[in-house]
Length: 434
Image 1: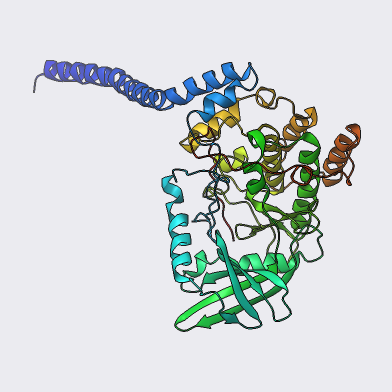
Image 2: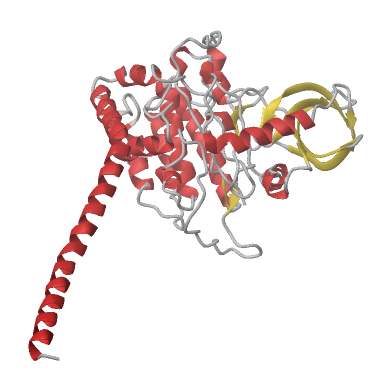
């Protein structure tokens, strides 16, 4: 074959390879631009909202009114994710009707089926307890008021044993509550049993009967807010309750007003409740921390959870305290900038980019310092409980607030609950367990 043919063929091949080397990067660049454009279009609405929220927040409370116009105030924080293995969400009472996000549907269905299954007739005798009154349905089953022959009253939670084992939350709640009996901020544990009525089998947890939740009382407050003295005393007791929980190597993962209740007699006492979404921090039989998982299902209540929950990282002890600060700001202002927002990505965007000073008007400056400190901690690190408790005590002393002063719900009559048409914001929640 002529030598010239090989020369021509080599030249064409070199040319084709050169053109290919130019086209491949160009094609890759085009695809990258397309992806960036789609991503930009997807978050444009969130960015616009963030800018608007920031602009309004510079005028103080105006941001709250703009946000409340878009949604109800809060539904007792909505529904938390409460599956014992991180897959479901627990229902709780609400301040107003809310639209349940798709990822909370499982939890709502869980609660609904549980409630239908456990329609225990009033007067039914279960062991030494007589069912006296239906109180409602929660993330860990159906709640009743029961009494003994001596007329002592208790709260009883019932959960069907027909649920998948991974979805049964009451055994975990009973286990945690029993371990917390040394704490002043946990309800008294009475009994945990497996019972059967006719063809129905269920677990029951009997505990001290408490008063209303902080969320219920917040619903009836003017503008859904409490005075700073009451909020700081709630904060101190709530923090101590959380610290006791952490001392037995559990994290709560669903800190919110609906998960704190007051004593029926001593209404200054605040209790931490509902441990069905808790998770053990240590390996069984050891004092070593469990290794943080790399990809964690979303857990907590979007309105109150830390940014770490949105990032799908393992929640540690500092995340409970982080949620507590958000809760206290809500109790002071009656809302937070991200209440009622969907999807969760928008809430995460607001939490990440809004400066604390933009929504913590009239809050103690120490709240911002605490959040700044918590953001430096990782899953493994233990918060400075002594320092944090001292901060709350100093805030109370600086304002001359003493423990014998009445709480807001003691000193004045509670207003009627706002009609559903009133402007409110919505809270959503979610959390996991073992």
